[in-house]
Image (tube, rainbow, N blue to C red):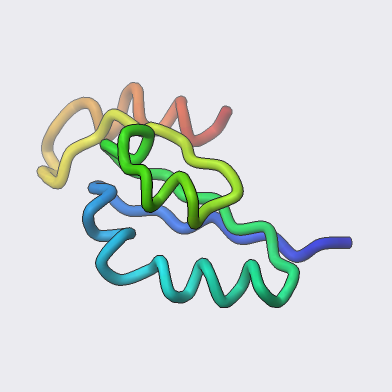
Length: 77
């Protein structure tokens, strides 16, 4: 069974800046590494580094209703 991990951030730029080296290293070791963030679908470097990317419509503002409504439902799917 292939180990799996999902790396999540509110913004794709955060995944690109901090998590891509980790994602690449885990993939080299046989892991399935997926990413989820706002803006990730249009980020070519993220698309190349993750096995699958999931666009999540949320914001960095913890009081933004999108964080509780649509983003949570998308993550459950």
